[in-house]
Image 1 (cartoon, helix red, strand yellow):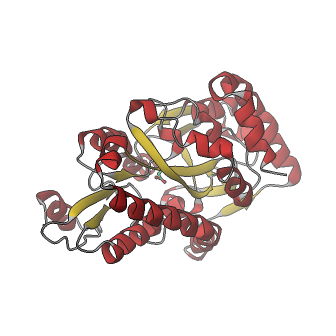
Image 2 (spheres, rainbow, N blue to C red):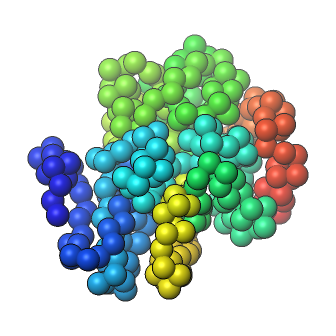
Length: 328
Ligand code: LMR
């Protein structure tokens, strides 16, 4: 079952987890863009595949394609509808073309910590939002948290205005663009696989991401330092095509959905520890991390607060209130 693509990926030295699919088994392909291991999403995808391959052996098998080896996050959404892949987990920031409701998750300083995020994911509001892209053919199976984001740049960033005049790579998110503008910087939307090169060649000056992405992609090696801002959530929608899901036999679908749910819980439970470990890995590898004083943090929050008003109409004040309530 080694496809040309897989062989190509192997030849390039990228890690591609392949399951041995037997004849007659339904093949479930899961494409994502991050590291295969040592990362909340990479590890969750592997856990998912291991369980499907063991518990659904003979009926289904799952192959995971990490590191953008099969599709980037833009292409993967089309590929789901075409049936070229059955599972993806793009960040919620990348759904602008499908729903504006997920702008909620990008609001700066919305969640105080990952526990608040977990509490919000358990609410009816969040569960309803899983189906925000149903009208365009997708079913959200769960939220996979990945951590809070930190800023890095080629100079120290202690106050939001330190970003003045700098260019930051962002995901395809207008909320992120507004956030960078609020710092006086300019934003450039780039695919994840292009970020390291863009930082290295100084096409952009800085970026924002989780400890796990900053460590596993080695962004810290091509930046002056990282500022512990915890300014925004990075979380994924585990997403599939509704047509594909509906095509499964009821029993098979139930078993698959149960595994998806259990993996989602386990993955979210281990994110905080993995993020802390990757923060430490950055320090151990010689990276610089700058912490903010209370006053500096207050300045970041104040600078970015106007961004909320800009997007409240798309998101809905009730959804914002429900997310804020999870901090209590
Ligand atoms: C990014 O593009 O920075 C992230 O969405 C990548 C990821 O999937 O964590």
